Image (cartoon, rainbow, N blue to C red; front, side, top):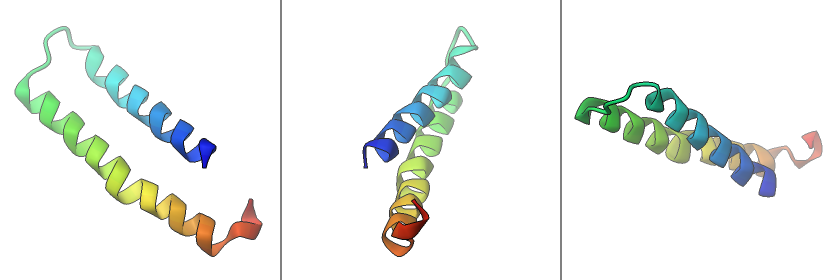
Length: 59
């Protein structure tokens, strides 16, 4: 569980760094960042949880 949280934080940091390269963040970039974070939380996170509950032996 700690590993999953750490991966989410790492992914969030990567997303932040991607958009930090531009000195001025536009509304479009903010929207893209929001969508990426939403995808990470709503798609990737449940998929990881599902894999953990389905295949606990793979750990």
